[in-house]
Length: 365
Image 1 (cartoon, helix red, strand yellow):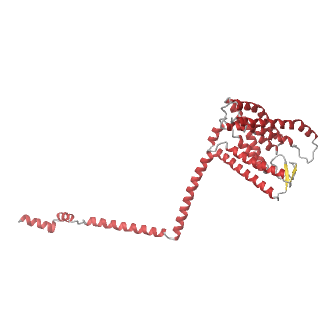
Image 2 (cartoon, one colour):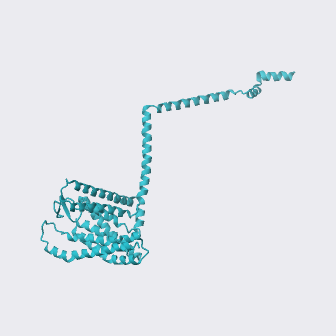
Image 3 (cartoon, one colour):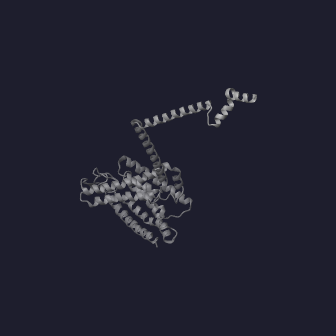
């Protein structure tokens, strides 16, 4: 009986642990745990109220505008970054042969414009050093009525071609800045550097007749072309490579620079002209023979064959222009030298051009 009395007293008065154990069995909670759960619930409610308040504030007009501006700036920044990355990869992988496209475009614009001046009755030929020469970019100048519609069309087409060629040339200049090591590697081989002279030829055609800035650019491009010719000949000699048509842009092509340089510095233009014709007389016969007997030369390379005599013929045209500034000078001596040397040389280079064309066609057979 004593045992039962003690047990009942413990459960009623002092048996807290056993009662708490039975409470746990029936799903009850310790007061400390209740307090902890209550505090956690309060903290969660506070956090939820804070999140709801922030969401409500973001839905206000000023926050919506700021969020819109921020997302727009982020989107634009991402797109600009992607564009810059793609543009850098595109410019870095531009081949040097892109200069051929630029030269073809700018030459088409110049030749078509000069042909239009020749054909229009509103254009009269004037001396290059005359004040009436409004477009001094080519040996042979005209004074035209600029209000004629066909003249404006020809002039607009010429400027369009010039702008396209200038953009292509600037892309190559950017390649020098962005991918300098790639350019250096290309210029250290006579095979990969052979089209580099096309960029210099394009620049002198684009910048000639453009005022003082054009004069500076023509001078820099002509000097760079001359140094490039010396460097290319040195590399070809070091590699023991025989001349072929791919040599012409860096060597004989200096005749294009000669014509444009003559517009500002007549004696320097004649020097570059003689350089072009000298290189032509050395390289052209060897190249003509190699294309005729060597079946390993590809057709695209062989098709450059006709460009060498054509460029030399073009460079020789500056001999037809007097280097003095008088409107009506005494040109008796000039006419005598002109008839003795110029016309026979023109016929000779014309025949060489025909041979170059036949050699180019023969490379396809």
